[in-house]
Length: 147
Image 1 (cartoon, rainbow, N blue to C red):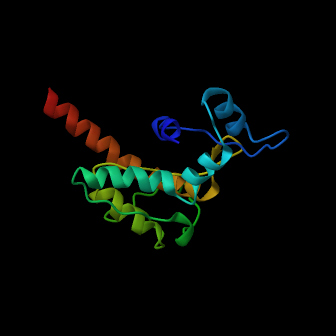
Image 2: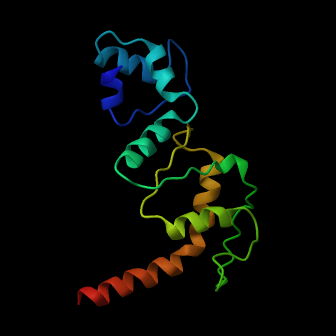
Image 3: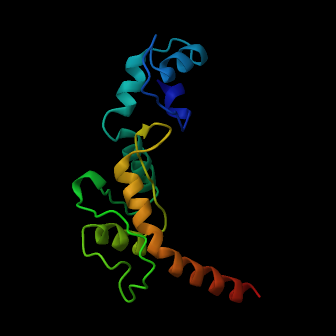
């Protein structure tokens, strides 16, 4: 179990011909591996929770947002500057924008479907498209401070 905790990252797969890929790989690389060990670590959002617990133990304030609990409209890539808001849509993505605006770091957890993040995570990433204007301005400001 300790070896699994120290790996930091395990990509899981959904194909189950002989056994799921992650179990086959770990069985070959970890002495005395049992699939129940990984299932215990992956239970719900345990990996993200462990990372947040580690940050809290160092004095960080943490919060968790479950994208599945939010009602988020798909991005229309409208290209309109929504200033002073982040987006023209008024939906639950504002919860994420508020957290993003006030955080120092993000821990993102998502199941992997078809070699990418799940639909809810992709939806949130797409809705961050409107933040590129702000990021570009921030990068230019940082370059001016260095120069």
